[in-house]
Length: 233
Image 1: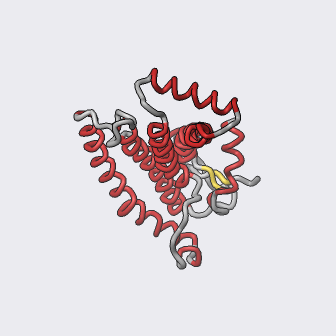
Image 2: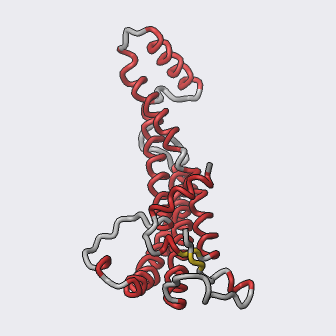
Image 3: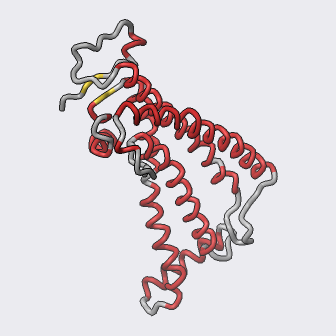
C-alpha cells in the first residue's frame, strides 16, 4: 500500500523535477515519506476519538439507550484509569494528534514539493534561477532555522521530563514531554527532506537539465548515487 501511495503522489511534484530521479535523493525522500505516511494513519484514530468525545459530551442527555449505556461504560472505564472524566484527556489527546500530524506533515510537504510558495516572482524565473534561489534559501534560511529549533526543543523536552510536566488541568494528561518530543523528531525529518531538496538542486545545477540518459555516466558506485536519470514515462 505504501508503494502505491508513493507512486500516486508523483503528480504533486513540480513538472521538471518529476522527470528526474537521483538515487540519493530518492532514498532520503522515501525514508521521510514512509514515516510521515505511517503517522498519517493517526488521523483515523483522531476521527474515532472525536466521535467518542462528542458522545461523552452530549450522550448523557440522550434518550437512546445504547448511547447512554456506551457513555456509562466509558465513564466507568475512566474511573478505573483514575480519571474523573475522559472529556478533558480526550480533548488534549486530540490536540496532541493535531500537533503530530502538522509537525510531521512539514517534511512530507517538502519531499513532495507541495508546500505553498508565498511569492509572485519565483514561478516567472528560469529553472536555473529558481534552483539557485532554493539553494540559497535552504542553506541560509531553512537549515539554520531547523537547527535552532531542534536545539531549543531538546531543552524544552528535557525540562518537561525533569519536572514531570503535565496538563495544567487536574484531570488532563500527564507526561507533557511526550508531545514536546515531537518537535525535535519532526525537525530531524525536516532536515533530511531539506537536505534531499538541496542535493537535488545542486546536482541539477551541476549537470544541467537532462533530456535523456545518454550523456550521463557514473564513474563510480558513489558517483552513481548522485547521477540524475531522466524519467521518460
